Picture 1 (cartoon, helix red, strand yellow):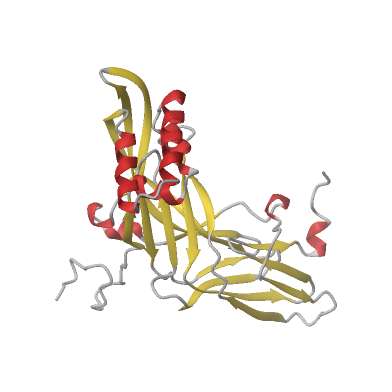
Picture 2 (spheres, one colour):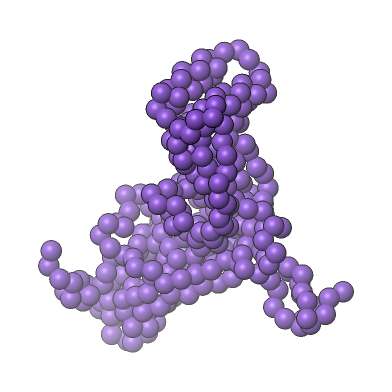
Length: 311
């Protein structure tokens, strides 16, 4: 039993709101195993770790021979570990950075009174609201995260919103040695467990205003279209519509680590709940929105297009 001064995550005692942590870790895969399934990570990881080109090519050649051998998977993992031993790694500094992993971007058309509401429906594969696979930087471990279901978020009057989850990353600045000789300095990074953070309240989902709906965002593929021709409607009514879909195709996003210049982490983002968008659209305009894997993109109403500067 808790009290008003101290609440555990998810507390429903009535003295305060529940504070469920944004994510839980459901699996960690070491780099030596991850690269057996994703060979494209080999050169990327070793360059981030500051291996010299000659050593990278030696590793790649040995790796290629290894992946074509009949050895069992456990033996291949051990051999990759041994190949990493070609260079010694020494941590010189450790930093922590909280990065915002984008889950979905949505917005409302630029019409006074227009509103779009984002929410998540029932789970269709179990678990939380999203699954993230955070690939380690350098030879850091890959971490799978289950992201909790979020509350409802709203955008109105042309605003564009980004729903995100804050993830804390441990960043190590490392020195690479060949014997006693320094050959380079690089970086390693991987997700920190929420249990190590001390205050899980800081890890809750968020929604912020962002720039959006530019021509560069125009989608090539979409799952559904909201298409309402309301120009001729002079009633002043607000038309309501709703869309939900279960497509759970994963996408990969690149997250800049601001504490390390020119280094980004790769995150595989996959939805595990039905996505739901509710629309309130004032009469008098034509509306069209494309519902995509990572965003909702609006074609501007005709009266707004006339206001856009010529390019």
